[in-house]
Amino acid sequence: MSGIQNEVIDSLASGVAISATMKLLFGGGKGFGAVFSQSTLMEGGKIAVSQMIYRMAVRPALSQVVPLPKA
Image (cartoon, rainbow, N blue to C red):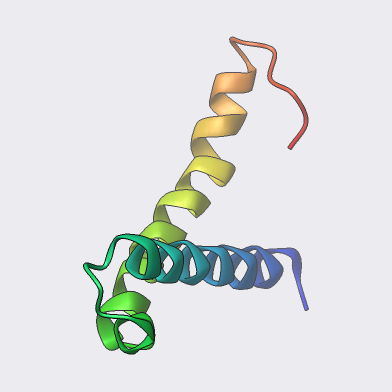
């Protein structure tokens, strides 16, 4: 796979994991049923898009101004 495909898969996996963890911890007692839902995948997709934008655009631009640690 190419670098961009790996980046997309990595972002989606971490986005869905973050969304599922948030649902499990702060879902109001709905349990595992709320974790495996379409809304979890949709929220995970939103997180993935924001992560990709940060990694591909914001972080490189910011590193020109501020020395950032290696990711």
